[in-house]
Image (cartoon, rainbow, N blue to C red; front, top):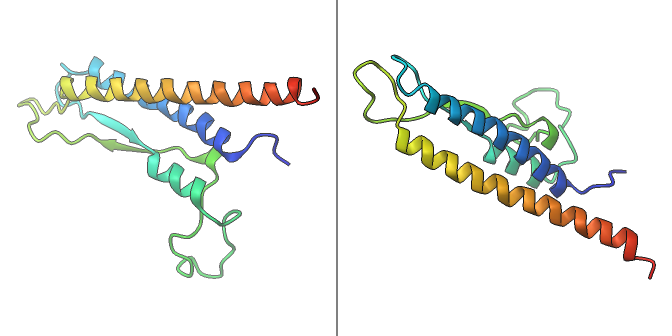
Length: 137
């Protein structure tokens, strides 16, 4: 039995991945003057959605990997996200693909999402604490 629901696990994993994404975006900003540097990003939302909203209790046992293509779900705790090269239609002459404005916008968006998730997780714990301390009254 799990004391916490899957939504709390989702929030926890999302926060972890937001921290990893922040580090990657900060690295892009730090390397904006490095010739040949390729800006990267971390995408994980679709993986989290698939892990959260799958009706299956876990990975299906199959005799052939083609039988249930796309139906096996990944546990929330193991979602790592995918590192991708950020698209920049106008890379510099030295091959650097960092667009500082885009990276700063991504950092701001990531920070807002991080703050929203930490508020949500704090609210969940306050509700749990309230149920424990005030539930018997």
